[in-house]
Image (cartoon, rainbow, N blue to C red; front, top):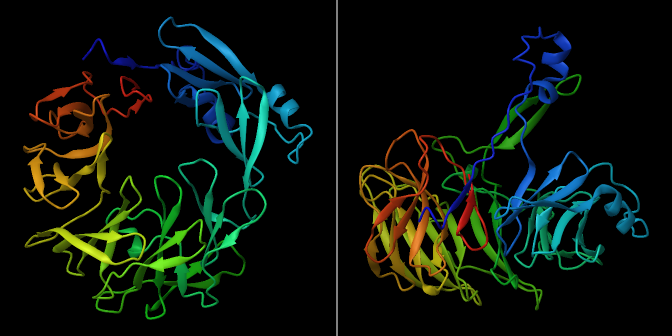
Length: 425
């Protein structure tokens, strides 16, 4: 495994400020601490898709490609070329530093500029305007096709499928009906309210009705005089928001609602599309937080198809992770559970049959970060060898054999390349 995994440990040394024992001024500490005291690092260090090479921004102006095999590097494109490429476009010459980019293939990256989503081809030195969103857009989510975009304006949800116009998915004048945002106070792994399907044909989203939730007063001290601002916060024993899940069809422009049933104040979390876009999976959790049902829905009509399994606990059940489908088999998925008092992963069929428990022991699996080329093994972040360290492990899905990949005693944060055979540590 060591021969197949290249660990790039990029260490950069503090400036010689400390070695020279130079006295710090107030300006150094208060106004210039980031530039003078912070450790040096590489800006925007990322893998280039479908390669073993990485890219980073040198200074604020040059995008560099580093070859991890022969240690060579070349300049892909610089700020002056970016300015030239966009000089005759609607963006004009509006670049003072290199933009924050996202690679989408070996030659093309995208970035946002003035509410425009644009792409740049570093090989041909050309650009495209992919999409445009409103100046008032928040909670922005880009679809897997790297073109479609969903966002919210105030309490309503919008989608933009090109750069010409936006589609208003919800049109609620009552500000207590909120779509496309987090629900349930962002508990149980709920971090956003917009869920694109894998092929970008559908958009699932939360909608919450807060009309029965008590107002909770906060004081805005940023203005003079201070102002009172009410937020919706369900106090203990009082009514909670009612949550629904909608599915918007990009082709028909219609929205259907999942039949999530009662009780109306249940938690709905771990929203996951299956790879075929036929099904949506949702974890239903009761208000006592001790009884979970994983339910499969028909994405075309919103009806419940099957309760795959249930989990109960005397104290609580804590679903915080979406389903992870096997790359080479969309009929199987990995599920996180604390049913044996430690968070481990379990292999299930799409019909709810438990195939096997993959990991076990007095330690926890924190994250699934990828699969090997054959999809026979999964890479995880776990605390197997120390409760205060996050290490990378490879686990064989057939026999459960586990091997540690990161050797240093530390907390490791890794980024795999497209092939999952190299990673940045």
